[in-house]
Amino acid sequence: MAKTLKQRLAEQIPLLREERSTLMKEHRDKEISKVTVEQAIGGMRGVRGLVCDTSVVEPDTGLVIRGIPIKDLTEKLPEEIFWLLLTSELPTKEELAGLQKELRKYSKVPDYVWKVLKAMPKTSHPMAMLDTAILVMENESQFRKRYDKGMPKSEYWEPTLEDAMRILGTIHTIAAGIYRIKFKKGPVIKPSLKLDWGADYARMLGLESLKPNKGKKEDIYAMMRLYLVLHSDHEGGNVSAFSCHTVGSALSDPYYAVSAGLNGLAGPLHGLANQECLGWVLDTVKKFKGVPTEEELAKYAWETLNSGKVVPGYGHAVLRITDPRFDAFRAFGQKYMPNDPVFQTVDRVFNVVPKVLAEHGKAKDPWPNVDAGSGAILHHYGLKEFSYYTVLFSVSRAMGMLSQLVLNRALGTAITRPKSVSTEWLKNKVKTA
Ligand code: NMX
Ligand code: MLT
Image (cartoon, rainbow, N blue to C red):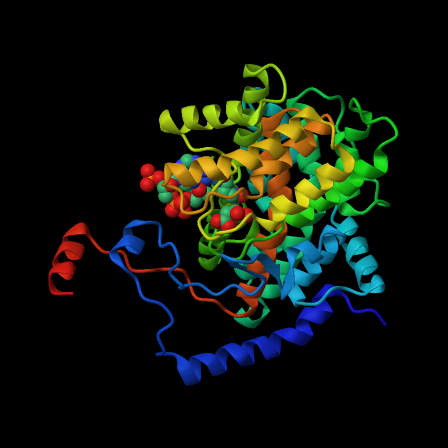
């Protein structure tokens, strides 16, 4: 008989606990990283001080989920990725069907969430709306309820998983509702309970009825599934995962922790770069009245840099290659929209900006990241309100944040509390080092 996700985790967790306890018993004092002044001042780049098993990102490979490079996962459903992130296995057909059924069990969005969203200022950013919705749903937290009743530490992961299932069971419906409320697209659409998670999200957004999508239902579903797979996780040190982890480490429940992660994702150097990136691309199309030439793009990139701004969608704190997630979006665009002028511009930017950034000499990584290409694809399917784009990223990244939380609860990971030092301390330390 097919196992549920909870049953599979219940089998794995004792072994994971054993593995961690052996590491601690036998090797607790071994050094795995050092910290330079540059790292302490420069956002701890490259410091190894955090354990995350859901995925790994190395400079020369990009995202690898449980040993599988992301390029080999592009045909999978997001739900399969969630199972993979948590268990390090892809689900069987039956396990996948069971997981989908269970997610649907949690698909009812409480009425108070819609009331709160509708009461928010019309000018609220869609990310502020999503974050508010997740936070107000904290009212549903099983973790908090059981914690208040004195649940033993060994059981923490169980209501964490239940909260995760409720967040994932509702977040696509909430996110689609935000799109329809904020951009006056008509009444909120209910979940179908038949389609898979990605396809249903696309349907609830109403993408099928947007121009020019007539008859392209399957393409739109494929696009959304790909989008949700590609953004699902990026190891533990990125701003959203680390924020979620830190808040979760205080035993704040998953609603608080995910909401903290989303606040980080809303920053222009992190998830908001996708909205900024499409804005940058469209500005060039407008300025040069059509797909710009490579010379025009180079000029525009230099103007951006000389005005002290970053070129959004380029550079990365870890990667030193073209982000394989960008490659996957580019391949999708080449297949489904090779003649779209916005996609063509993105492609042309890719030929130009790395050279400009290399010549500029500041960015350590001149290559495109995931945000460089995703917007053009959404734009092609009529989703043109780019302040919404980070919400799509969030729906997907909730899978990564939540799987990391569940595993950390299962392993009893300690509260995050690194030591900070003062500038005075640094100055004294370098004198003696
Ligand atoms: N355009 C212009 N300057 C850049 C860029 C860029 N795309 N990328 C890095 N730099 C600058 C950076 O601002 C820094 O300047 P300064 O010394 O004046 O502070 C210098 O190059 C060195 O930065 P790095 O060490 O290469 O990059 P860091 O690890 O600090 O930051 C990012 C990584 C991703 C924040 C940075 O590359 C960036 O701001 N990129 C544009 C925004 C973006 O695309 N963010 C999305 C990240 C991916 N995501 O999905 O979240
Ligand atoms: C992400 O997907 O989280 C981004 O690429 C940022 C990062 O990994 O630092």
